[in-house]
Length: 112
Ligand code: 5GP
Ligand code: ZN
Image (cartoon, rainbow, N blue to C red):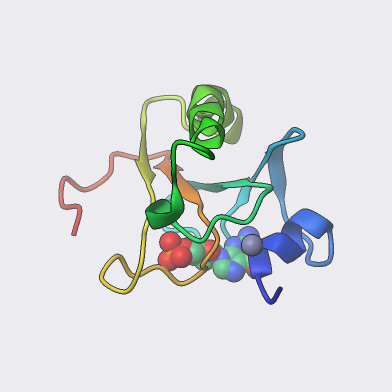
């Protein structure tokens, strides 16, 4: 499959890893929008939030259970924002479910 994030999981594209376990990978965004900008992805290919179901949603709970540790490990020690973009109007560019962790500064109150 021609998916950049699946290639990062497979080690075919290098990434600056922050955290990894058997189910998820967290790495620094290549084009950071804040001093701390980490992406967290499931190792199974899920296209976006539209494809989260009762059957696969445990991975989302797992990701959120690791977010506090990953955010602090990455340097967001004073709070952070979690974003997932989905589809055309969500301006999703990589079609593999990912959660942006943004922090390291006081973020704008504007979200869109
Ligand atoms: P989206 O707009 O789909 O929510 O965000 C995709 C994110 O992936 C963007 O912030 C973009 O900078 C990041 N990204 C795209 N390709 C790569 C890559 O090869 N490596 C890393 N580390 N980040 C990437
Ligand atoms: Zn993928």
